[in-house]
Structure formats: C-alpha cells, structure tokens
Length: 425
Ligand code: HAM
Image 1 (tube, rainbow, N blue to C red):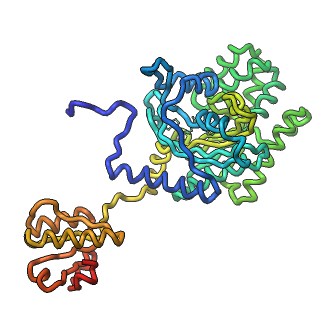
Image 2: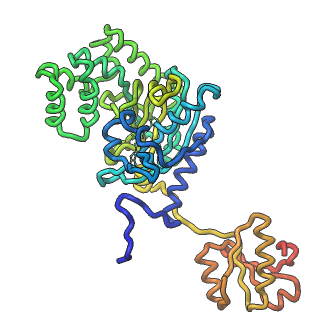
Image 3: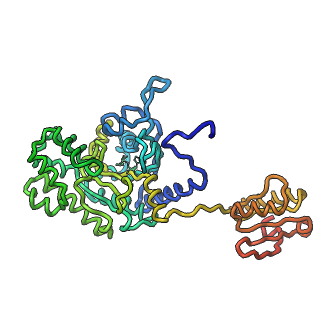
C-alpha cells in the first residue's frame, strides 16, 4: 500500500486517462465557439456568502468551506453560476448584450459517494445573459445537445427533458398549494424519480396538502403533455403564458432540427434555488445514469449578488457521467502515444549531431524523442515503438561522416537514406 492514498471522490489523471477528459473538453470548446460564445474563468475559491441562500440548501451542505488565515469564510466553488453572476454584477453594464460566455472549470462538492457523482468534476457552463426571449433558452439547449452530438452521441443515446418552474408553480397553485409552500413542493417533486411514491406523498403531506389536493398534484405528472395541461388548466393566465413559452421553445428547437432530442417533462424541477423559468436536464435514454447536464433560466440571480437586474439562462454539463456514457457506447477514443521522430544513435559520438537534428526538427514543429542515456540500438528501437514513433532516424559513424541519415518508416518498415540538409540538420 502506498503511504498516501488519494482522497475519496478525487481522481488522478495519468496520461491515458487524461486523454478522455481532454477529448470531452476540446469538443465543448469547439461547440461553444461555433455558437459564438467567449471563454472566461474565475477563482476556485470564493466568499462563502456567495453560495448561502442563493444556490439552495443541497449545495450548501456539500460545500468545502473553511476560515482562511485572514479570518474570511471561504468555499471552493461547487458551481460556476454564482461566480458568473458576481463577475457580471461588476462588468455587465459595459458589455454589449446579450452576453454569451462559456467556461469549463473544476468544481468541488462534498457529495455522498455514488456512481456518476464525485467530489470534484469538470463542468462545462454555457450562459446567455441579458436576453428575456425564450430563443435564448432554446439556444443554450441547442448548445448542450450539440456538445453531446459532437462527441458522437445521437438521439438514441440521450434526451433533454424540459419543463418550466413558473408553469409548475401556477399548476400547483391551481391544485391548492399555497405560494409559500411551493419551494417545499418543488423539493418533493425534484426527488420524484429517485424516491418511492410513498416518500413523495409524505413530503407533500408535510406541507399541508389534503388527500384530494395530493392526488391532483400527483396526477399532474402522469404523462401530462402540454396539450393535456392546456385543455385542463389553460384558462389560468399564468399557466397559459408559461405554456406558450414552453411551446415556443420546442418550436425553435424543431426549426433547428433538434426535435428528436427534446421532450416535455413536468417532473424536472432542478435542485438549485435560483431558477425562475425554463428548467431542463439531459439524461441517457436507457435511464441508467445520473443527469449529464442541467440548466435553466435564472432571471433574478444577478440582482441578488448586487448587480443590475439582468435575465440569464444557461446550463452546466459534467465530465463524469458523460465519460461513463462515452465508454459504454464505445465512443471514447483509444489512448495512443505518438511522436513524429525518434533518433537512434549507434554510439555516443553521434550524440551532439542527434541533438542538433532534434533541435532543427522541433523548430519546424515536429515532435522528437531519443534516449537520454547511452543505450543499445535494440533498446532504443523498443523505446521508439513504446513512444509510438512514426519515423526513426538512424545515426551511425558512417552516416555522420557522409552527411546523411537513414530514416525508417515504422508503419511500412521501409528505409531511405537522406541528406542531413533535407532532414533539417
Ligand atoms: P447542477 O445540476 O448542480 O447545475 O450540475 C450540472 C451538472 O454537473 C450535472 O448534471 C452533472 O453532470 C454535473 N455534476 C454536478 N455535481 C457533480 C458531482 N458531484 N460529480 C460529478 N458531476 C457532477 C449547476 O451546477 C448549475 N450551476 C448549472 C447552470 C449553469 N445553470 C445555469 N447555468
């Protein structure tokens, strides 16, 4: 046993495991840029206050928080949205709207250990700030969907489930849930799929719902689509308004050719406190994994952290569940090492020339490797293979004297003699 074990819930990234993470992060960056988003970042440590009451109890319970040496209460960032709100509270006024920003930070949450949930993860955040139109909601959903399509996943693999908090609040109101009980009802509904029906009933009963109200609330989630809701509750002004917003969001995604990737699902509420409108989560179609992505509209958060009131919508997508899904679908790229050239020297006398050749090749942008200590030719060839060299440059006393080198193509085995000048020596 090594003396120091890794902390539970944290990962090491040796090269062969870093490859998959880089593959994911590269795809996220490409898609963000394709949609015209600019990259930003912030500090990993923030004032504890930034999360309390803004993110919601669940995340606050999971904070890595402590008092620093200056007596400040600080926390490792568990999510990026409060930092984004803080950064923009200071700068948004000077920026043209809407602001389209993305980032992919490492985040920290002291979670209960379970599949797909660790104590650190990388999370792609894509947000549009300064636009109330539901076209912004559809746009960020399209970015999330394309982020997964870019990695080879299709509508057979995942689905975005979309709902609206305002709509759900209005429907709960129609079922007799008092306004002040709505947040507690949201918490109960958020846990619907993860807890037994009995536990949900108990949670709803705790907030004072009678048997009939309880049955009506639960009937909302039994396959209710937008048409059924409209025909039953459509005369309610708030229901009608938020249903229009949801319907428009689906129309826009349909126009983008993404209808197969989205479905309406009233059980999506989201655990975080700040969402005010559209909410969505992306799941694998087989329903085996935790959520891949979650997001929604949060029109009051910027104001809450002291900025101008600015509407905002965005999402966070983690690398952990996504890596599991890619591995399951055999979409993770195989790890391979590769250098353009490996220089094999027959004896120590050729070493200075080898170093000169390496310098020239590297200056031209090629990757080059060689043995750092004197080694047999056989050992050098086996290192060249292990490092995935595409070509081996062989340098012996005769070649050096004649101003040439032998170059072996490792895939074909073919050898050619070329002048040092040609190689850049
Ligand atoms: P969230 O739902 O807490 O939202 O996290 C978003 C995604 O991050 C999850 O769907 C999951 O893929 C990943 N994730 C979260 N916690 C963990 C964990 N402990 N281990 C592995 N992966 C995890 C937010 O954080 C919002 N701030 C997203 C957002 C951005 N909303 C608007 N803009």
